[in-house]
Image 1 (cartoon, helix red, strand yellow):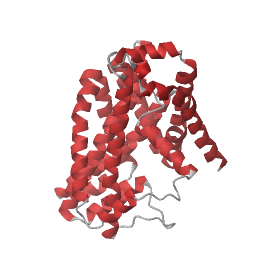
Image 2 (cartoon, rainbow, N blue to C red):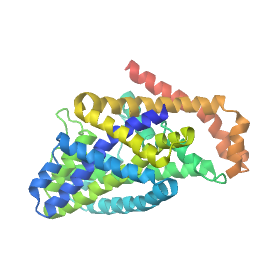
Image 3 (spheres, rainbow, N blue to C red):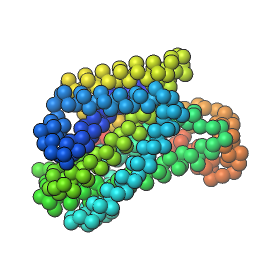
Length: 355
């Protein structure tokens, strides 16, 4: 089930990533005077969407086909520093613009009246699972590639900390940029007075902001959508690795063959979504990220907390940390996974359904 969900997520994720690539190339075309090409690249026609999706899936497949060391490790080591450097540079630049201060206030001062909204909490839960690739088998697959001497709780904590850190840093870019756009005359609120949705923000508001900044805006647009493309690629390779690793390890399929066959099948699903965009795109996103990932995470909690034998679990954890039973982790983690996590997931789902 996990690899099916991962494949479905990648099917819509590749579409969005293709848009990001197109907007990045559009900014390049603008800088060099190719206004007609730039206009086509920012249109949302089927041909452009399909082409962007296929190119992005091709990049993802090529990396996965190379294997763990020559593909995933090598490209992750290249892409992640580029991601961080580009993100920091964009944050530093945006914070110097008029209107950024108001965005910082909105970002850093929480609205407690909405903090306990069931729908908001459910969306946050889905976002957390999506961001950390939980409930789709990605962490399970990547964990199997670690050396037995690795301290798994420490590695897991570091991964979570880095993910949260990048997300917080991205917030220092997105929210100030929105209010810079508002300062420059670009509308960022809906008719109901709420901030616009994420897809409208990325592909309408921010390009509108960049368009008010002249040549500097085109350059910032290149870096921004390049950043988004890198982030998408680092995520997509982890998603495709799940079904490919399953095919390789469980059915003896050649990695290269598996990568191209499974990647091609996912690209075909992406095409079907594009052909029925209004009815399928939002549905696939909701079913996978909002419901399937947390529910699969719930099943994992039940299995690890109640079914997997305690001695087997400790045997694996002791390989990387012989003193793990005496540490704080083992005092908290078992009951947290057994009781707290499943209860929170079910409570959020129940409240959302009743609401």
